[in-house]
Image 1 (cartoon, rainbow, N blue to C red):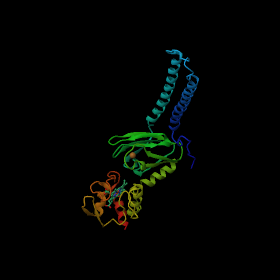
Image 2 (image 1 turned 180 degrees about the vertical axis):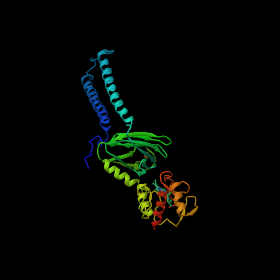
Image 3 (image 1 turned 30 degrees about the vertical axis):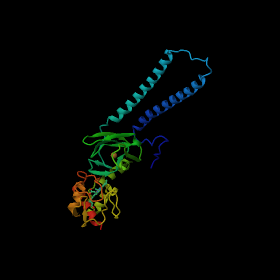
Image 4 (image 1 turned 135 degrees about the horizontal axis):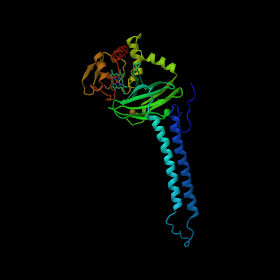
Length: 315
Ligand SMILES: [Cu+2]
């Protein structure tokens, strides 16, 4: 894998837009640094040069200085106009999606990202896989609160909002792994809403897509369920070894009685598991919080079947 280490200030810039964003950032950083140094130097210089020296040293009455005032107005104006045009240019590039861009649907929800490749019918959780040197358009929406899709290595960030689509596009220029963060505080586990963007070669991408779009064909239902348990991020809250996490463990729950927070009870059978996955808010298991996201619309019928088959095997 190629080297993607960043500089002291910035992560490695791995997209076509990164150079433009960095140019504006560096221009602002360097001019601000120079102006800051000049101001501090001026404060020190003048406070020494014009310090009080006895009673007779009075300051002359200066009302203004036209030359100086023009200089301190014109120079900053020029700087601001330069920043505006550089920024506007980069912003235009970011906003206009190339026609041949590949579209991926992004869903943000407490507290993970899911990605859907509509043409291939593949879905992933917390891992966005894209081919190098191809424009990719992300069509994004949220299931609950406002999240923000942020890939520092690509220099892109966009709010993800319920009941509305937002979009952003990028074209990766280097193979490697890039961090994905949620940049909008969205609840207690906001800081764990972390993913990866994997940039791979065109060929690797085609292979990957083919593999991921398979709906568990040629696999037993419970093996497929075991795969979904990881790829749909159930494992972030549910263990299979009996230890408690954010959610109850899956180990040995099938066929047992479960008690809810209102004291009522139910038997864990196929219908109960199904309801728990698609409508988790209906019954809350005693001792846990109502934080499980609904997987309604995110799982195909066969995938729900597979998860149920998998949970049954965990005795
Ligand atoms: Cu979030």
